Image (cartoon, rainbow, N blue to C red; front, side, top):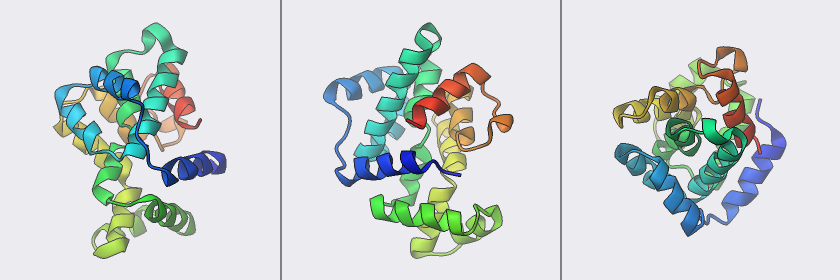
Length: 174
């Protein structure tokens, strides 16, 4: 279940879709492999700002353990959202729709086989899997790819080292 405070912060941060500061954007690009940079640049300005904030919090928490793949995981955990093409209000609809169907995977999969807004909502709700696939194709480190796939799973299902995964999750649920 999504954290309502987190969702409210994300919504109000997206209403004015400014990107990360120039310094944070440059820093983010330094953390990424060339294929990852291409994906980063496809993300919306608001998603890049959010991701840069997550990565900075992870860096502060983990310090020396904030390796390049860990920071890339923070920066690209939501990259799978790009193919849905939903703006802020479409994402609100997707989030409410997911709650209404209790995140039923069969329904979400069926939605992706339709057209229009329903398909886009289905794609948005599958962003962890789609992001993991995108990162695999881009040559990302296994940790980076795994976190994109797992960041909405229950902790018991994480394969990423627990201390790293906890720092990533805590930084995302700011």
